[in-house]
Image 1 (cartoon, rainbow, N blue to C red):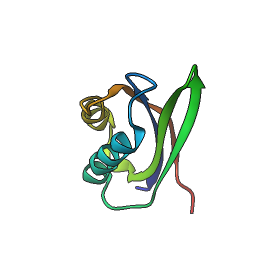
Image 2 (cartoon, rainbow, N blue to C red):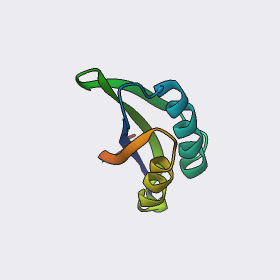
Image 3 (cartoon, rainbow, N blue to C red):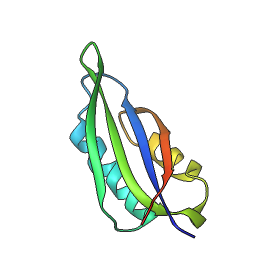
Length: 92
């Protein structure tokens, strides 16, 4: 099997939500799910001062579904939603 590259978009409850705290908690959950690997984070402006947090990371394909990770991310204080927006097989 190979690795897959997963991108998850985390939407905060409001524009006032501190994304740094959400990012720290989300990184912890991703490491528990996928292991200690390189992870890229990005702040994506949405509208009216609201920004989303996007996390991109690699995980073994045999891990299967990311549903358990998404559930854990939704439980973080200040998070309105978390959804996988992209999954790709890693090449190389």
